[in-house]
Amino acid sequence: MRVGIFETTHFEGAYPVIRLFDYGSNDITIFTYEDSYRQFQFLFKDEMSKYQWVVKAHDESKYKFIRRIYSETKSRKLELLYLNTITDNYIFYSWMVRLLKGSRIIVTLHSINNYFNHKPALNLRRIVRTIGKKRLIRATKEFNVVALTMVDYLKSKLPATKKVHCIPGAVYEGRSDKLQPSKEIINLVVPGVVDARRRDYDLVFQLADRLEQTGSSTMITLLGGIQPLFGKSVLEKLISKKNNRIRYYNRPVVDQPEFDKVMDEADFVLLPSTIHNTILDDIPEIYGLSMSSGNLFDIIKHAKPFIAPLQLRVDPFLENSCLRYESVDEIIEVLVALRESPETLASLQTNARVASEHYRVNEVRSRNSDLFR
Image 1 (tube, one colour):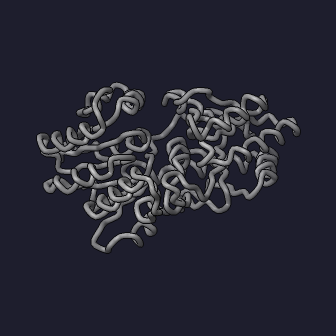
Image 2: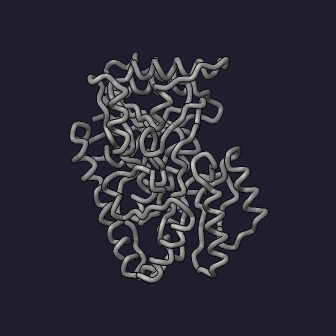
Image 3: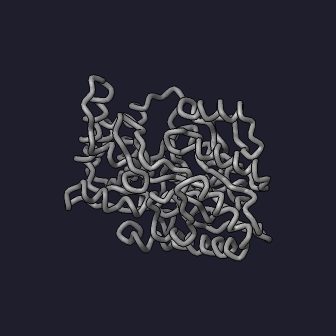
């Protein structure tokens, strides 16, 4: 089968899609932007030549690139086009979907409410985005979401004739586990771009202060670049507080090799996720229901146990490696309990590996047999 996969920014989420379609005699073409292409080079290394790459030129407009995707899809006779991330120009993508009648097209929705709940505003760009999203939903017959907790929610928004798949944002390919796992949590990692809309960094600062006071050996690493607008206030606090318990990266992007290294060395992952947020156009989204935290896919890929807010919905496979909290006090209690019970920590680490086994390539393919035959 001739497959096209389009990705703009979520290169880490497109990686599993590429891996899943990479079987048998499939011929795979990947459409992407320059920044993501750079990260794909880290991810695929010597395997880059297995795929056909169509990369947006630096001076090429997004509109022209969409036209090029359309032309390449036609000329290469792609049987399936997988649009993994659409963040703008919705009207033009809807136009492309309508015109590519000979190709099976799947669109991933990362923020469901943004496509169905619209707020009127005297803002021309927002009006155009709203029209484009509505047209894209009408034109598309098949959709994908990245978490099992989102499937029924999207189905409730769509006519029964439209199909919803669940291709997760990560696959598990095994990692080089520590030869001697820590008997306490030394490395606590908060993965993801530093963005105050998506994560509760005040909680992280409170936790770091408590760790400092108690003399704990636990270190917190904010493993992600700083979002230029919504991470600025967090960066200012990091600089002013100078808390010795927090490590961070004062840069826009953490390259994939460094990210993977730190995740592999982590003892536990902390998800200080906000549950309700408004990322775009004042439309409320709910993590775990209308959108998913990308951190969960880092957990899957690296097979790590994690601490998450009580209200955060996660895939059922992950529950046995997850500890819940409602306050900083409860996180401290968890860390103390795990320090005093290393066998419990070891059990959670084992559970994390068992959980990730459900995201092996063959497991995901078997759950989506109508896509991967």
